[in-house]
Amino acid sequence: MDEKLSRVDPKLLELLVCPLSKGRLSYDREHNELVSKKAQLAYPIRDGIPIMLVSEARRLDE
Image (cartoon, rainbow, N blue to C red; front, side, top):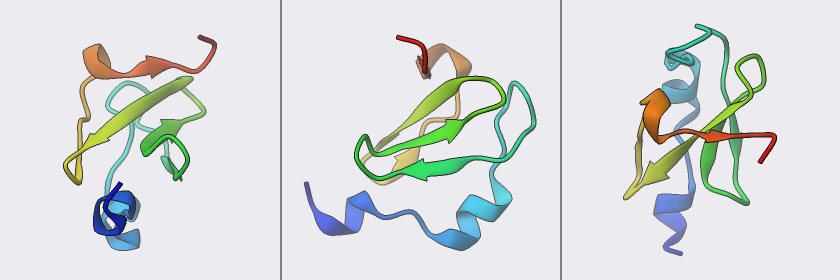
């Protein structure tokens, strides 16, 4: 994976929240996802763009 695409700007991470829980997100570098522990969802990052749709998120218990 291109190294540029596997990074998330820390300032962007401060601004984004989970659309479901409105809680903070953390970056999972291994899976290239933004994780909401509160909602138990992981939002994918595709081509460097976080996909912040609940319908696109992966449940953490899967």
